[in-house]
Length: 329
Image (cartoon, rainbow, N blue to C red; front, side, top):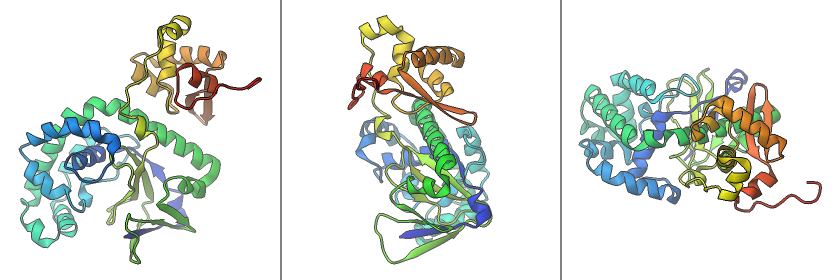
């Protein structure tokens, strides 16, 4: 079913970006249950399934997550990058009446009656999500967050350079912008259209790892409307960074060689510092040296700066498809 999100001019001005570790945990859990997803996550899912098989709330999770997803599991973050703990606390505090209504809407009244009462349901689901996140998502969250933040940086630059129309034009093939209205198509394109009113709260755009390659729209938002779209670069997420050759490390130094190797996606200085386990000031010094050698380029937009390898830098670390620059290039 196609979903139409209606936005006033004021709401268009309130388009914002955010990352939701809670939503990624829910979608990762759903993927482990065998619903949706893509082969790109196969290795992670293979490791997660034995852990999920020991989960005491597995029957409840299966009943709740293998059909249409209740909206109460996907609150729109109030900040750009909330902690999982903060979002989980918000989930525990969800209005039980809203929870019950969303379960009935997503699962149907008969199936919803088979679930525990809303307060008990919230407590048990939150506990299960906390266990799942701690064991299976948190160990990878630094890398996931870096990828999601890199996507946010890229979209923010597009919004500045090309405006809202340009932003939606490249967000996803299923997202179409039409003069104040967003049309998001489902996988099965039928003649029916579900209309979502933003209600004066604007629109939140959230890149997703475990939702990839689909676009997910909240059909009944309580506040801001939301679109969760596939983050760029997910295909590289589970690849181990290519080790630098001893020769390259001997010439550049180990940290600079590793820095080039992890720049598969445009990344900020804090993101690179987290990946390498060094301080942001150290990363800045190494980036300065690599820029001076023509191996790294930096693009600035206001206070934000994203770094990426030049053609020569990509060739040095063996990027697939990298082409050496021609004479004078």
